[in-house]
Image (cartoon, each protein chain N blue to C red):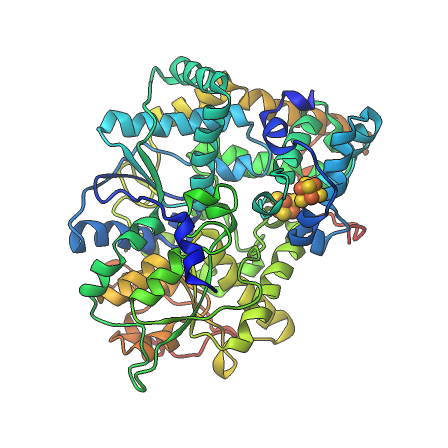
Amino acid sequence: MKKHSWQEYQKDVADDKYYYVRSCIRQNFFPGSEAAFLNILRNDLHRDIREDAIHTSCTGIGYHSDIVPIETIMTVVARQFALMTESGYENFASSCITSFGVYSEALEMWHEFPEMEEKTREYLYKATGREFRKPRSVAHASDIIFHHRDEIASKAKYRLVNAATGEPLRGVEHIGCHYAKIFPKNGIGGAEFPYVLAGMIEAWGGQVVDYPERRHCCGFGFRNYLVRANRGYSIANSQKKFESMAPYKPDFILTNCPGCPMFMDRWQYTIAEMEGITYGADGHGIPVLTYEELAGLVLGYDPWELGMQMHQVDVEPLLDKMGVEYDPSAKFLGKNGKYIGQPLDAAVNCGCSGSSIL
Amino acid sequence: MLRQDVRVREGLTACMNCGVCTGVCPAAEFYNYDPRQIVTAVQSQDDDKIEALLRSDTIWYCGECMSCRPRCPRGNTPGYVIQALRTLSQRLGFFVESEKGRQQLALKRIIGQSILDTGYCVHPKLVDPGLHPEQGPVWQWIYDNDQGVYERFSPNYGKVGPGACRKIDDETLDEIRRIFEVSGGQAFFDTIEAHSERKAREMGHEHADDDYMMMVYTTNSGNHQ
Ligand code: SF4
Ligand code: SF4
């Protein structure tokens, strides 16, 4: 890949004062990632980021399942912008890629069809009495981590380097379709050379490994996962990616979207259970990480405070390679160290965690 | 009617039938599906062809990944065209004439209801391990111990206030419901219900009840690949 291709699509990311909206999927499956994002921004990078208790889903999963009309989702988007306006912020930061696509689509459509913006303002006012200003910038949360990647590197406790051999760890990345395929200019690196995750891996000492199906969809496909009868689509597309990346022997998969890491984690489990096929070393799975988890590990956060116990595929092989210190017996503890049981082991697991509790 | 949808105006100018969209499409790989043919049919403005599409399984295969959008040499977005077709198919009640189309009732009752009741498309209690065996034993553990697991990351799990999977307050939920009323979202839900009710009876069910919903949620005739 030629590096200069990336430069066509440099995106300006605000440096401070963000208004943060959560993702339905990320807070469900990776609540530790969202907590880490806020902690990193506030405590490590000393930036101002506001989370408002009264924001909601953007309804994007409903929109892309075609049950929520475009007029309705635009009005929900307008409400989120109104909350940002009321809080005195201008830089909108989205934890979700589908939402990021939805916000970008609304702004683009309003630009192309001003009558739609008028209608949306009317609906919003009628329904809520609220009014909004458009954001000065819209970023996906990964854009913000990318923007601060060098500062994170300068504070790093661990690097993406094999602690035993000194070799860089090998990461494959998966960008998530709605990050830059809808509006390539809104994503760092555009649709063809997305650099947002690769830039993090490189800045933190790792090596990015290219693989043929790097741009292929993870297979969510909205109704193709959400409806049970259609799930073959989802697993087949994930499997295509695993088969494409496995020969390059990655140490980890890094993901951008909230949904992709969940699918790539769970479908590895399902394929192992159904077909006995695993894609990682030693007959286990390939650890799948969110970029917040990776940033957190680099900064020295405890992996269980990052929520990595919520993955089906064990992350311990990566932690061990990085030389991260962690307590295996604390993996499945609840708040304040309370024992709350632990999951059964599966084929993708290494049997490497929590055993001392039993 | 289709041209009234901004997504058709944005998503289709002059398709030259090159098939690039089909080449990158994950749905085309899995199903007997070709987005190029859909775009061609819409471009033809042939009402019979378009109505046949609205009644077919074909328009429901797309995963809305939008991989086709950046690749089309004419700047088209087949994914947008499909969104517009799906919207029209539901407005006209044609969606119930195909196996994949009928699934819209399940999506409305699962995701749509969740938005109105909780303010989220998805929340932890919605992902029932019984219906989602692929979620695995770790998810089962999370599901069974949700309070203990989420509280570690969220000060307000299930409670009002900031944080992951917080309870969204009633005033906010009222605002969301009013947005659905005012902007046509609720009417669209009602349309999906009404046509599903009609079809359920036609298919010998007493109503579009939970049994009918489970039937559309799980039925796969295997005739799609
Ligand atoms: S890529 Fe564009 S021009 Fe080519 S067939 Fe698809 S929609 Fe038509
Ligand atoms: S949006 Fe639909 S038609 Fe376009 S590539 Fe994705 S699945 Fe195929």
